[in-house]
Image (cartoon, rainbow, N blue to C red; front, side, top):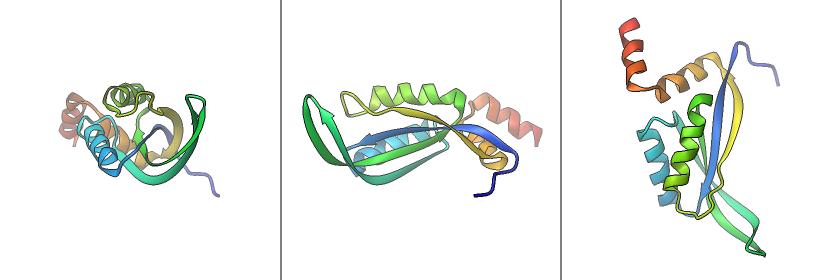
Length: 121
């Protein structure tokens, strides 16, 4: 795979929930609060050990594209609004094209930074 030119760092925050309506609701809240620019939802099958037993369940994986500086805020929001007692919250730094990373920054920026960006145009 060829290397991307002019890459910038972003973060991907992952969590999983047990239902599609729950995944859509959490994704909508995250986008609405500008904690992520994009949330992808994928159907998955999880196998895990919980309270001494091996379990397996169908779940929905949310992959949230955000900035490195917003990743911890997104994780805190997930923890507060997640239906599970112990939610999966994984933060992974990622490289993205300059253009995509710029879009992620723009969509997760504060209202003040968005006004500044509009004024610069």
